[in-house]
Length: 278
Image (cartoon, rainbow, N blue to C red; front, side):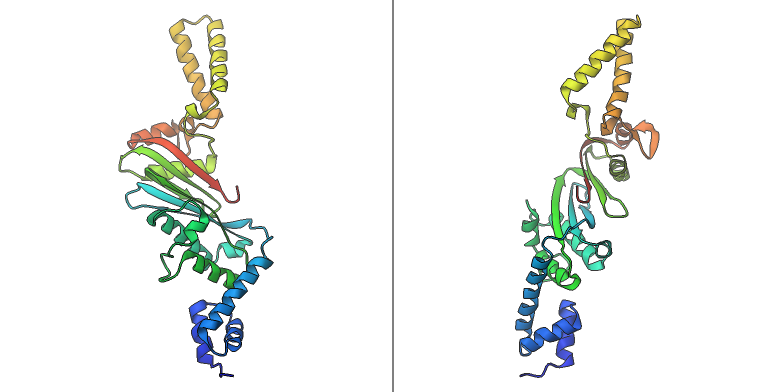
């Protein structure tokens, strides 16, 4: 049997970043053949997958990537089993690379399609290979749970814990993109249900307006005043129903979100808000 030198073990360990004893065992089993040792270690990855297949992945990170011109953005959710792993540098790197590849690559409809694409920070490797290596290193179930890419003028925000995030798509080109991030942060914190009143149930909106009209007319106010009263109360109703554009802006509640955006030349178009695991 070929002698397994410390230098050979170190070289393979540096390449794979796996525990020293596992690398040595694989090299020994492979008779010193590095390629065979790598194949053996890959089989171990499959065993880890099978062993932990039923484990719950309730921790993880959401990562976003936004193009330099803010005209497109991507968001991914990478899940794991424990909080320490969610803060692991390798885990954070994989989440970041998935988001960047989704933004800058050919696009993907599913997480599996994305994993088969090149890893931006690992020359010659796919994201799947980086994921497999990380699973082997950490011995924990890791899942790329969901992905999305949006087009249009976009701002994004990820909460410091990585568990809540938002991409806000707007119309316009005001140039002051800070407000887009601020509104995305507003969405993350206050959790509106939709962007515009038109997205609410039309029957519910009609019923509310009819009720308010009846109440206002009963007060004996002139018709033109009735309309103004109803319009004002409908704004309150929209806020209560979780319409983003009618909510007081979290950063300056003296104005509505729609007003804050308009001041910078933007109009909200849509948003995507994620909470880890939901």
